[in-house]
Length: 390
Image 1 (tube, helix red, strand yellow):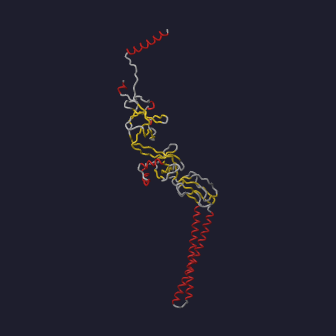
Image 2 (cartoon, rainbow, N blue to C red; image 1 turned 45 degrees about the vertical axis):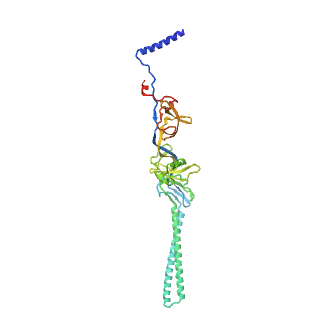
Image 3 (tube, rainbow, N blue to C red; image 1 turned 135 degrees about the vertical axis):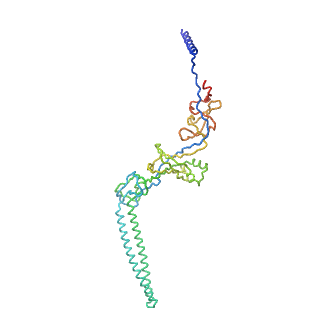
């Protein structure tokens, strides 16, 4: 009974197909679709070379006192932007003022002594010249002439000593004035005030750290360049004595913050040390950036991006590369339109969508791009137009 029902079912299926065919209806056929492919060729690309960097004001200055005393006033706040010459701290100046007044008194006394010595010397000179005339006329003895000469010489020496005393007293006044000036600490450069660890009333000395003033009108991004990169530049023709010329020929660089924000002003590579660090195998370098709006601060970390021109390289889409464990595969289209996997080595092109092929392909090879992950070894991937339309 069950067998009869099965036969009836099969008969009904063929009857239905026959009816559809008789009515002129076509049964859908599988469409043959070619995979997307490209032909490998060489081109010039710009690769972004990225270096971790830390910003530092080009004229960062540590502020410390030049004299000892009590800190009377703090005239700035942390993070405040100040101009060159602006007052930052004031130290008790009373002792320094007393020293200035004492030095001035000593100077006045020395000047008075000098005036007296000069007057004495003038008198001694007149007496000597008079005795000389009288001696020539044989009116006075040689003894009187020699006495007047000795007196004149002694007076001249006293004038020299008095002048030296005046000079020394003037130097003391100048030193006292300088020390008095040190009681008012001003900004040596335009910049931003850092942390202030002291408070009003503290005793300070030349060993006391007051703050750091970051002269941030121009900022240096300090980073390290690997020895391999330097070797590549040497192989490209850079000579040791042409470092400055080579840096001048480098393109502008960009500074990118940790959050991915790109600083709007471009910078230049301005420094490259000539000694490789034995511990890191790298050279120290600096890129200088203008900071007219004061948006950059010392200590900020980010990335220096240097666009590097690489000519005559094979660039393919990143989606053409299939990652299989520790290998990178690309499906190359053979003459019979089937695909075969080839192992390649690549480096990033830096744009997030392309890679540079270092080995495994050659110019003129045709490879699968879109859908490469779905291709199997030996699978046909290209179909002529007549096959696709059947």
